[in-house]
Image (cartoon, rainbow, N blue to C red; front, top):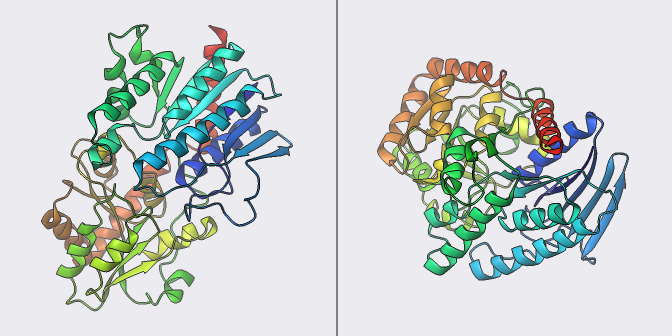
Length: 414
């Protein structure tokens, strides 16, 4: 089948959602499908167009399996909500136009959110071509933005919620990453116009981890040597340094363990909150900041830690499932997750026996969990091994691609 995919990032961009969609696309093309990917010019790492990609608003690249159309994302400061909304609108308009004039005669459309606006573009394209529309939700918006306080104007919240609900209603299927997100989305359309069978409309197709690429490896590697971490007990946060993460918990734990010269906290990544966090950590000699590393180095980064942390602010684990969790499990390292109880992340950590889940924004519980694993390395190692065993049963990129292909075929047959 011919598929049209709208997504905010795609290789070589390094955004986590770009990695997800790139691998799903690879699985779909391996199964003989042809794709037209409509995405942004690479910009995620520095929130500016990567060198060599500027100078043109739209670029096309023909491949053996189809075409990639990259449009300008109009990058802006994440903290400027108005400018970011305009950027999303401009990117969505260009993406929608590229999809409408596609020469591939698509059989179905898949659009990824966030940004939420791509759903409207996906629906318009599907309507014009009279084909099924599948809306893939990575983070539930505007829930995440409201929880973070990034959106506070009631009028903006109402408008975003209306767009969210209407897009769900118009989609032929909505795919989410977990049962938590399914319940969230289904509740918003239950009893609404055209929402008969809302539970059936919302499908769980989880993200995946490449367990051949990420696997247990030696701790004392080139990453440790480069950043002076040899012989240390490394507690690591690796990922986006933004408002969603309670990284103040990491600094609080570092202050508590500052007396131990063998324990080092590493914050690996970039984001809008990084500069402020570095200022807060100025008096903590046991905290190291490392820039985001290339994708090829991810197995080294994951292996270099003795303990990984996943700290999400209160409420966010109900509307987001961080992909870094599965990277940690695949690397065979234990995790301390500071997340809402009963959510997908907490349940996974407990079910896999891969670490310790504590309540969100609870510095005392978070620090106690880390101290427990630092003082009991054998227990930490056993948790890491259990996490690896658990994730080996998780969906593969090929399995997720097959699930999407089956869904498209089902919708096309209706």
